[in-house]
Image 1 (tube, rainbow, N blue to C red):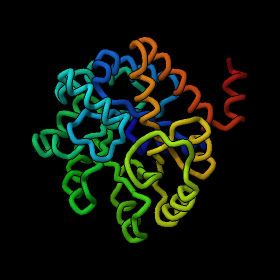
Image 2 (cartoon, rainbow, N blue to C red):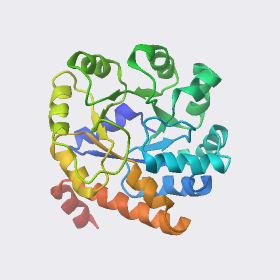
Image 3 (cartoon, one colour):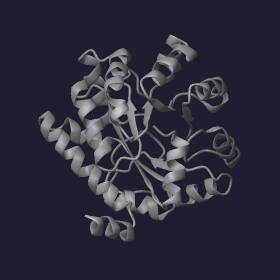
Length: 276
């Protein structure tokens, strides 16, 4: 499996914007999570962000918080999530990015944690409650395991802080599109366009935009503004939780296809259609 940086370079060479779906491990169960990973991988996901359920998810909105609560109530543990990944990751083309809060890492110790997740195919980490000032050890150690630590830039970040985060972030830079937590919004804020411009002025690293993107028109707009990746979480988590597991998986498949089509240039869609 390619690294996150390598995959982004390949996408850039083809002038493609990446789709990064997010789902919560263990909701409704780990068997469904494994199948959702396969479905996302087959239907346009370039990377997949997998959330480890956590009891105090400060960066997550109500949809993902509820999913994490359900997963924890069913007894989902990090060990079980990693066991599930071990069975499925080798069959995936999309690199897995693990979304976890810092406490599980600290509890195990940075090196043992990274060894565990690297062994099951994880290629990236997002740790939303780890500030830049304390990230150096994790970033440095993760690199020895072939794992890239992706840092978040908030809309409230100063230009100096944006530059510092851009310098340290590995794989890509995660641009948070709204002030607040994850969740489904009816529209995107125009300032995302200007935040992208600010980031572009200080780095040539790929930029992924997340938080609040829930519909194909949002994804298309973010691509038009120049993002290298569109990150969609709550919309996938919500669909996977509705109805039966089969219905949830079908809804996830449909949304993934719609989002991928929205960020794929018309000329490329025509080439794919002609090839079929």
